[in-house]
Length: 174
Image (tube, rainbow, N blue to C red):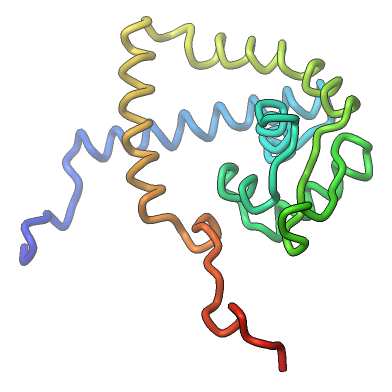
């Protein structure tokens, strides 16, 4: 131990990690199945639609969606394209910055959200929250919120906010 950190996890840490992974995997599988059956949506497509549904005017820049959903920008662009082909969203250049794309929820997108939300909420209540007390849910929200904040402070490259290249800022293209 050179830096004060143990090279292994305690049994409690290991148990917590395995439980988190198991719960996340089982819950995601069940939720994805419900989303496919109720709205023919992938989990990422649902996240995209739900975030747009909560956004002012049902609109958000693609880069902000990618940062919020924690998904690669190219992968999210593909998912948005699929949703646009179904008429659930529209994509257009941002009025503030033509290099940015704005994604907007359509009425069809709102209808699909309305169709999937009741089953989504029921699945979460039955599969996750039914086994927990109100205090447990508060503790879970606090603990996972703290972990999410810590992870977002050091996100993987695909989830990091986009930085502008110094070379391209104000520099003419060759």
